[in-house]
Length: 283
Image (cartoon, rainbow, N blue to C red):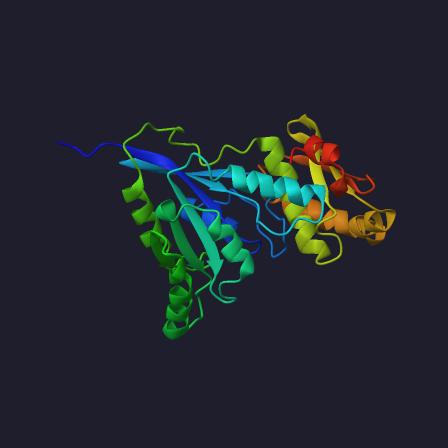
């Protein structure tokens, strides 16, 4: 008698910058979530799908949870919390290099230990004794399982994935075989623009930038970049438009051949503090 097809949902949660998006991309073997070293890089619930002959895992990447200082921060925390509900497993991702802090404890205290796995990330380059100390520190929470991994190199990730499949109940195939993510194309392009802006502008405007597609007639795409101040608009455009040119080139390299991308920059003062503006932007 053949084994039943198993499927289910796995939420990735944790503080900002612990490597949730990098881990998701590594597990599904494709870039489905943008990545940077800035807080609030992930602003949407991103689903990545991993298919096997005997089952399907649907991962939900969530915004990092931190003390909110803006309406945007509050909305992102709400989105992350909502993603923990009706799922089979929650993976709380911890940074092995910084240890377990107050923010980690706050998140873990809100989770069901019986369905929570601790993923101790960023172990690449660490000595085994140091990794063991981090696992021991996390063990006080008495969670269901503990996995040391490097989302960057892939170390430990196959073992984590194999274990997650064993936890899934018999169930349907939620997504077709050729579907790796359910992120709409327009949202994905807007997110790629924001990702490259974070890389190019470094520390200057990360939180103040929002992006959205305002025209979509493929292969022609227009993306609006919103900032909160005129000074930030100048930074995003750059001298003689060089920053926008650089961002556009980086994004086009990740799009199908022939895509025509136009970037425009507008100012929406204090949009992060305006709940209506946050929701209008799709967060």
